[in-house]
View 1 (cartoon, rainbow, N blue to C red):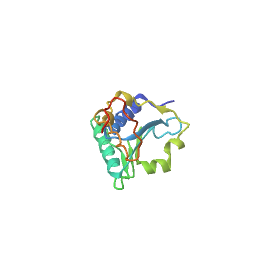
View 2: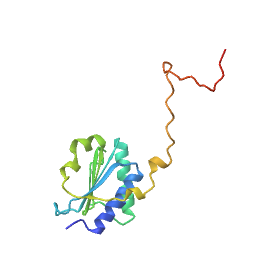
View 3: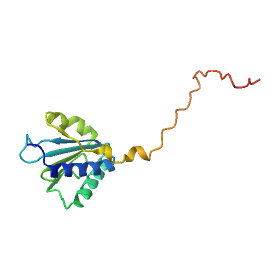
View 4: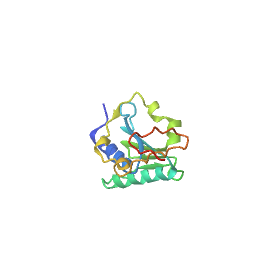
Length: 153
């Protein structure tokens, strides 16, 4: 048996909310074959405690629009690893250092990954960000002579 459509829809909504708050490496794992208590683990990471909490806020706001509230929330005050338990979907938002250390994807690596359809969402980080400026040339960099430039004498 695999995760039901309702659980997948909740995970996708939460993933889109996390993506909107610049969540990184968002992955949903179908754990329904291994666990009787939940269907999906959603994992996202962030580079700071403040961003972890911002992602959590975004997820809770989005799921509240669907009349969903977590039955349990842990780790909010530290902002390093926040767990939101929506019964069928358990959401882990981790600081990127904690995510590497605990490696949840490795622990559940034999479980199928759910397509979150995030490529359909507008990428907030790429659509409005300007292209980086080219690096300035260093004084010691060799410059090839320009054949079309007039000689400076």
